Amino acid sequence: MSAPACISPFDVVDAQLEAYNDQDLEAFCSFYADDAVLCAYNGEVQTEGLEAIRVRHADLFARFPQNKATLKGRYVLGHRVIDHEHVERAPGGETFEVAAIYTISDAKIVRVDFVK
Image 1 (cartoon, rainbow, N blue to C red):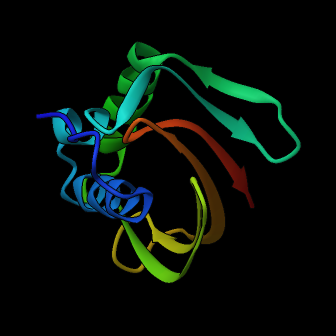
Image 2 (cartoon, rainbow, N blue to C red):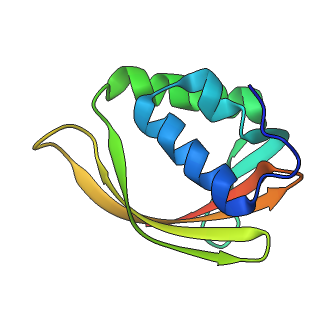
Image 3 (cartoon, helix red, strand yellow):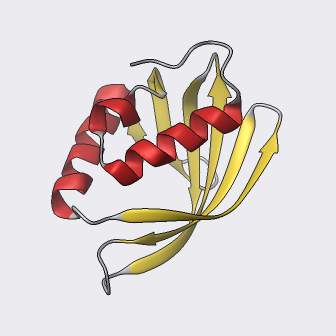
């Protein structure tokens, strides 16, 4: 499944978050460009390329099968989407807040900057 070129940045990120919460690795990865990067705030690249993103999330989903991200707020600024998410690794387990700044191009996520 891949996103059509006419899908909005909001819809790309929304569908990606749904696939993340469903732990549907193939659907999740379908929203990322082949050369996408995941970065720490201020630009340090932590994961580079779709295959590395796939490996990272396969591991995450295996280690935390009840992991969920709850959307606390969303802002759309042109081709960028900023989400405030509350992440819970398991019911009663580790939780944290994160801001994810998604950059979208041609209906694919090309960059995510995480602020923790």
